[in-house]
Image 1 (cartoon, helix red, strand yellow):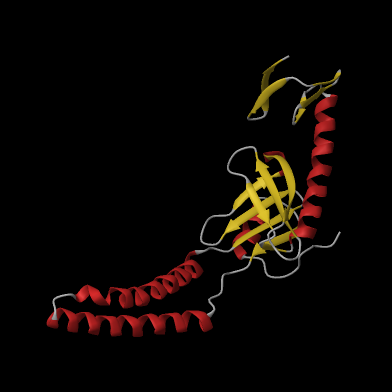
Image 2: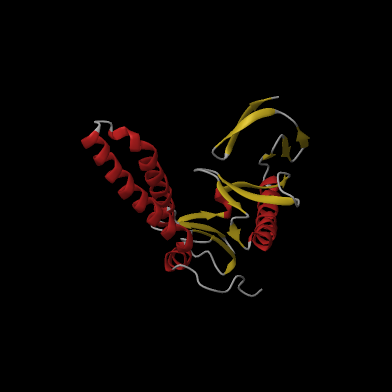
Length: 223
C-alpha cells in the first residue's frame, strides 16, 4: 500500500516515527497556521493611534482650562478598543501553535509545534470515537466532524474539521485501528483473556454486561 498523505512532514515527526519503528506513514492531518489579515489589522491600529492622539490632546486642553480631562474619555476609549483588538489578533497568530497528527503502520504520532512529539503504538490506544454535529445557526446547513483518539494514558487527542484532510484521515485511521485491535483481541481470547468493549465484556465463554471500569490494562468490577 503506498504512503498516504505525501507532502511536507515535520522532521520531528519523521525522526520519532523512525526511531520507534512505526513503519510507513498512512495518513496525515494538520491545523492551518493562523495568518494575520493585515488589511484589517493595520487600519485598526491607525484608527486607534489617531483617536488616542486626538483624545489625549483634548484631555490635556480640558484639564488646563476646566480641570475636567475626563470629558475626553469617550474618544480615548475609541482609541484603546481597536488597539486592544489588534493586539489580541497579533498575539493569537504568534502564540497559536500548529498541530500535526499522523498514523503509521504500527501507531500514531501527534506533534504540537515547539514541543516534543507524542508517540502511541496501537496497543497503547484504548479506543477511537467519531462524532458528527449538525450546525443549525447558519443559513445553509453544515456538519462539524470530530475524531477522538483515547490513549490508555494521557489526554485524548481530538481532531476536528479545523484540521486539513480530516475525512480521509478519519476513515483510514479507524480502519487501521480496527484491523489491529481485531487481531489482537482474537489472540487474547484464544489464551483465555477477557476483552472489554464499552459496556460489553467478552471472554471465551461468551459475553456479559457487568459494570466496572478500566484500570490500565486490567478491568475491575462486579457481576
